[in-house]
Length: 444
Image (cartoon, rainbow, N blue to C red; front, side):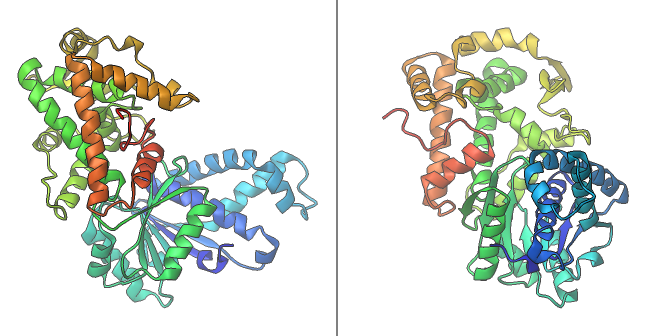
């Protein structure tokens, strides 16, 4: 049973952002559910939603309201039990309306960091900048009388680094949600040698209460998820640069994206995924990781695209911004051309790409059907054995990419980032929706 005392005054830093808004939603709902239990009826709970923009905070409150309505509809049986003593609540609509009101009432929006000074638990989802994070942690900790715990959503910065810079030892823990937090099941939890046992125990229990799949990563920059994704991306970029000399830049990008999506049966090709995360975000993560790792984790291509203001990411309404690709109704419509500094229709590149790859992908298993297939492992094993037996350019490139992905996973274990193959595979299966883990035995 989770201790409600630590949740009576919570702060979410960066509450109006893509990650922060999801964390705010999950936390406010969990705290409201706690407040509705009979043993907690005399306790006050508050979630301080803190961000730099009051306008954005208004928008996030609309998002919270809409999401809570959907959540309430799915758990109306529990709500009827919790509101059983309320004679004025009879119809489902009345109960849902009350629950939404109760969730919203727990949230206090603010643009002032001082609003976190009385919080005992602080979720942080601000810019991936170690100096900024540690400075804010220190400011809150210096002003607080309650020795708050800091749950940081960093996806790349070592927790020990934040401890050192903020001079807060044992009370900062990595609590890495995946995007979007309200939907994604995975949470990476990262402790340091200094992490207080009660902080770690609470983090694990809270993640379980949220219904998350938990993987404990060791404290290395990038952790397991980005440790694999960033190296996988760099390999894809390297392959595209090699192919560019043979078939041109646009065709090379399309070819590698097809190999990683169609041949490797992933939900997105590597460059589409990079657009989704944000080219600028990926570049910054690489910078952070590069400062802590011995291998060269950097891409001149990403730097060049950012200089041309091609950054990917999402618009406020959730639609995809242009990056390696231009999107129309959520689908890839065009690919960036370096020569003209413009986009050309994807359809215009496909004949040359398909001729170069020498493979008809129309008979390949489709990711969406594979993940629902009861015989998934057999389907995948058959697919990759067929690829491995072929001499076509596309198939050979795919097998090399598949092997490199496995090598990255094994490297994460060898370097102590991950504890075992299961953890690596769980992160990629759950956090990245892959149909299979990178550490496999398809060819054995």
